[in-house]
Image (cartoon, rainbow, N blue to C red; front, side, top):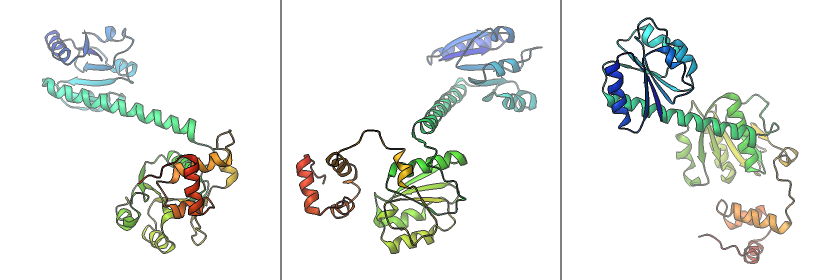
Length: 297
């Protein structure tokens, strides 16, 4: 990575350059703000706050997308508070150990990488997965049950809601350990939205207990094609809306059944899977044999 060192103390600048070069960084050293503004780009800016008679704020403005670490002689509003408000990333007080500087640099490199990943996934969800019809337009009270025949549609709806509200999502799956659902739900955060998959696999009595236990806690429960008519707080994605999210190619009946078996055999026991597909367990066994699907143990 390229580091631009803006420091008028030549000995200090050279010392920093030598030490950072040992860690694989490519360093450029300059002693004036005017020279710094001639550079087009740099990954990291080490900016001295005490270059006599020179205003460093144009550098912060030009390189605001880079990591900017102020090198300061002491801490006050002019050296720390105001530069940070203007867009600098951090500061380090002179004299400093190179290990301390490396820790700061590594921290902000990792932080910037995470920011880029978050932006990528947010854009991916917004542009590729989210469909306007999968939006909760009504006032939400919790816990909220979202019912659909499509897991993808429910996922889209929850992500859309979280993005609109600018909140993060905590994820829990009851498919992994439904027997201990009470213990799992006891750890649900009361200050963060939690998205729970597999609500439909709970018996009716346990569904009711679950709703009571989660009263007024920000939880969205995913329910695949299950009867939730006894519950009041239900948002249902209807078939017309789901059709917008399906692929254009039409599957044959055999292709559809094969796809559903492969997709849900890990989620449901044979009794439940055959029931959802509208066939007997024997017919399900025959379909597996026909399609060459070996049941996972």
